[in-house]
Length: 157
Image 1 (tube, rainbow, N blue to C red):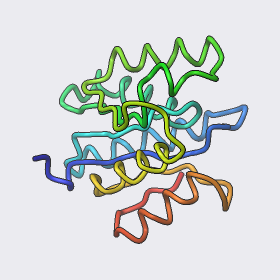
Image 2 (spheres, rainbow, N blue to C red):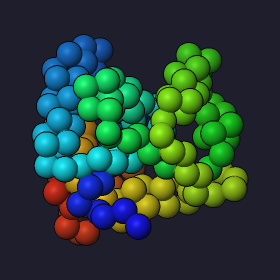
Image 3 (cartoon, rainbow, N blue to C red):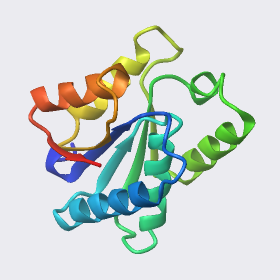
Image 4 (cartoon, rainbow, N blue to C red):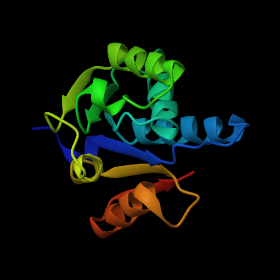
């Protein structure tokens, strides 16, 4: 069993700002800070937007920190999760999955609650949450509130 103190997860909006330069710098800084605190595993839910951005950043940082691991925690099978995405989003998603260290699929098919279950699973198995929260509604808002209730250390970008 993996020690929670060595696990961080991500949550953020699907829509990102046009210029992500500042977000990218802050995200890298947050991940490196956690690596320096002993975090090895980075759980990612595989959504478009911030999740994809965070996964790509972890993969890039693996060049400098080869001991870290990207764990994709998917709500349902990849083909179902990506069903309504653009071809570019799908290409990027499957590229990330190919490079990840582990893939865990939580439900054998898409259900109305599978995204919520994925978010809870990520939080329940982590000590840290790196989040990009700009709206007081939706999945990211719920996930951050849940993480607060569960006592995670939250790094807000």
